[in-house]
Length: 618
Image (tube, rainbow, N blue to C red; front, side):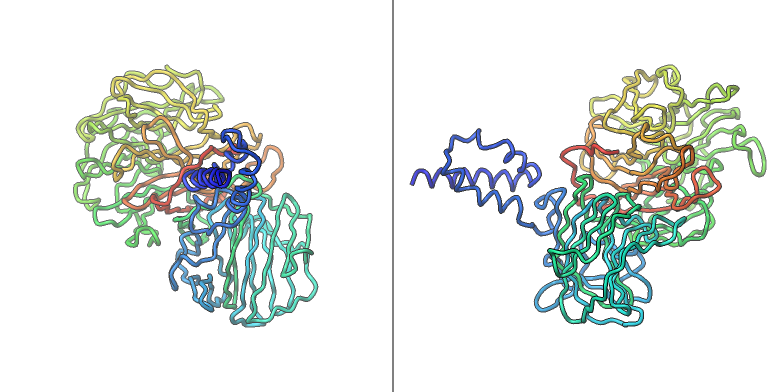
């Protein structure tokens, strides 16, 4: 009896660990053995079954914490009929996918659409093991198509497994982006799939190899070793001219890099029109509407960012330096920094300028002039978007990049810090800029936040260092000291966005940045293929929250620019969401950063969950 009770008690301890710490952490306890428990062989055997169940039985996909980071399932039972899944995303202007009741079960259904309609999970993984069931409710035989996708970066960059109802066969194809054509890699023999019956599929993608199983899980129907689209990407369902139900998805992340995230909406802001658009800035009006500014364009959203109307000609003060820095002040006013030039018409890239603060007391309807950063006009000054912050005591900081050793072939950069204690009416320059505190030739695109120990930090993402650096101030920004690396914040010479959440009950900061290895490639315009999101409660220590975007550029010749690049992120917090914008190049172009597309991500703050460990691949 004592042996049985000991086994039950020990099993309870392990069950508590599983529930409280999650399966990933629980596995570590198991792998460390039973040595910490004074139990014998009988007791160990008695709880072995419990451990096997906890470790290997699928847990519903509606609880990421329980399912573990690298294992996800979804049977759609916890979503009400007609509702939308917390995890599955579709085109932001579409309404083709929802939860359907079928024979007392909930399934994920898509209505018949004229074009291919996708629904996907926000997860970035290259190697996956995916199983699912599908049921063809109705189809237009001549045009109908259904499929599954892995490594889904966009509708033009994916690996797909498709069933053609007209030809009655499966085939595997891939496309690597807009610069590439679709390649059919292998086609199956005729497989007759009749509507009205459930079918089961399994897809295993590892490196250049993909195995596809249909109903017979012991023998693959198709195999290819010719995959070349090897970027981490999403997992998607797809259909065209067919009403199809999907159910019982089981997803194993074999590369062990990604995680399925919920509460995400993502889309390109504009239809493809060939116009170069990089990162933008978003601000929330008091009535909840959102205003998005991109260069001379303006967009509006009245549905919490689900859609934006535009572009319209800009009505807010236009920043001739192209990027927008604006902020809702603690007083409720809005401040916007605008570049003024001593030239008329179209200015040269390095034309002399200064920055003036503009103030609005009516949510952007009217604006008044405030002070300038300096009186004279100077060359070689510039700023990226959203480099303005306000401290709890009301002091505003605005950081400007200045070029250094301008007469030399390889010019450098430094950050110059300005502050105002009267909401932009007057400005003072810090006693020293970053040239005095660092040996790095480039130290720019910086931003100031406070830390909970009473100091300030100037975070700097753009340098020749392999990660984000920071300087500190102990006198409220009057002077700056030190140059410190942030080892976990790897970065490849690219901009970032850094904000304090005005709605958080305690100090809460968010950062998005390009989480890449500076030394990973010698390609011009360095690898910029992973956008990361992190959070801090003290302004100093950061926890990794999610991959916002990943798309490893297709191979290019040495010295060539990477096709896919992530540029100029911005970040805005509302009561419920984070809004992130980037420029993402999706095809080659004549400009250094190729053909940029303006892209927006809406992330539900309540669904954010930190990683236990930082990703080791960047």
